[in-house]
Image (cartoon, rainbow, N blue to C red; front, side, top):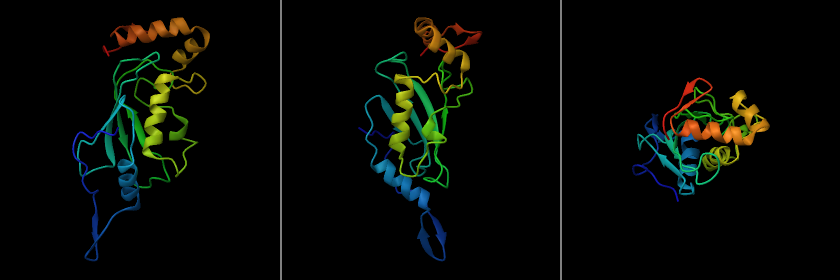
Length: 176
């Protein structure tokens, strides 16, 4: 079920020769937002209800290594969407093979596998999948990826320590 922090209003528009014309990207985003159907583990919020091109996402996985922890993301939709993918940043420091400590996210559909037929729902489900099944074969955090490949129990221990607000590999994490 899609939940908004505030009511969705008509997207921004610009004036040209006395008539209101919406950018194609804004129209597509409006369509994607109207069709969002996400699970209860995902919450989408628009800081400005008049700006659907910038959104906040809260993800709380129900299972897996990161179960019951909360992670926040910022999503910015570029003006050339859907020809270019949204820009996604993880605002929560997390010990994860596919997310670096600066919040960059490695998800194939946000890079080489992007296709204009994909939607914002595809991105949201892709992010959820990263937390259910981290991919050590396409890492941004190479140390976490190597540990996941070599020793899943040690990897789980590091995830648990990080989620409790501990230190992993010299990095301090906030309690999740």
